[in-house]
Amino acid sequence: MASLKISITGVRGIVGETLDPRLLTNFAQAFGTLVGPATVLISRDTRPSGPMVTSCVAAGLLATGCRVVELGVCPTPAMQWAVKSTEAGGGIAVTAGHNALEWNALKFVRQDGLYLNANQGEELLNILHQGEFHKAPYREVCPAVETEALLPQEHARVLRRHIDAKAIRKAAFTVAVDCCNGACSGFTPGFLGSLGCRVVPINTDTDQPFPHEPAPGPKNLGQLRALVAAAKADVGFAQDADGDRLGVVTEKGEAPGDELTLCLATEAVLSRGDPGPVVTNVSTTHAVDEVAERHGREVIRTRVGQSFVAEAALSNEAAVAGEGSGGVMFPRINCAHDSLATLAHVLELMAHVGRPLSSIVAELPSIHMVKLTIPCPPAKVSAVVEQIREEAEQGVFGGAIDLEDGVKIIDEGMWVHVRASITEPIIRVISEGPTQQAANDLAERFAWRVRRAVM
Image (cartoon, rainbow, N blue to C red):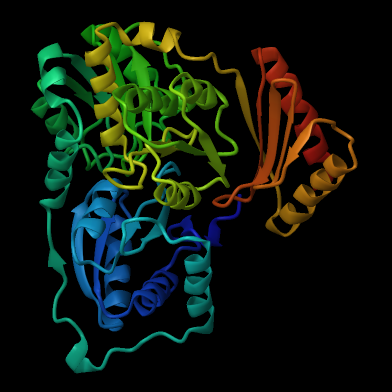
């Protein structure tokens, strides 16, 4: 895998190889030039490289005349909420999210708390490549970096106002939580405690490395499943390194999958009666459509990526939005993936229904999906996806064709999606079918074509 990825979503790479101080500082200068001399908030997760990366970012911002406020170890959604809720001109999250420990990244947030959209990302890259950064004269350089550690607590208070905290407290749930030694380690147990839960936490030591891959998918939930059983917990939650994604485990120790996280949140919000459609991307399970249909709601689909989903959620006044990665956003709080808000809504749903989580999950549509990743040299990615598109338009595969993002083919209750990743040098093949075998066969059929085109 290439160890550096620069795109409209930001920059990520392996520290000590391709992600070096010069590149980090230049990106920060480009962002400072884009937002103008303004207050910029910086958050980070718990990676060992975080302080070094943060220092480089702060230096680049100061050089452009920005006022820098470091939040320290702080969940990314809390930083995004803080940007929207204060007079900040933007924010930078120092986190590689679901990537391994050796990686780090910069994610750029605009004034309203959303990630930069495609046009803004292109503008940022143009400034970076041209190297025409604003250079503040010495009188305009802020004399110091400021620190603020209270904003995550403010974020938690806002979340409690948007849910039925009284019902959750009355239910007195036992909750197991795996914070992955990440940015939520110092916040989630306290937040759950404030909701009257008996909290059984693991992996909350921010001085230790990640105990497993940060992505909260089923394959990384072994420890949490065991903890749920040992603690006789009502539910288990797993958060990724920066707190935007959530994995869920039922009281039976079952991990229904990150796609179902959005379905649970959608059921929670729509059953509560919140107005508006549901927004998700073209690669997310169609089970979301079934949940929305039960409540008479429309589903709007976008390109893959939090910025695309957030823009559509904002413009369509969505009730809930998110992606099949375990990232869910609640537009009335903020258009950002927020694991803390998601787990709160799942607890609210459990409290209102009054039945075990496994029973609630059983009433949701079954999901049979396959997600494959195929390494591909960056120079060949576009050509490979274009070849699949041409074959689809020639009728080789049959079915309806959706070219919103890559190539998606829908036929007889099944679909397959082939697209280039925006964060890694890979091509993703995602399929869904009426059975797991059908989804497997469909995914492998297209993966074979992709591998042949890559050769």
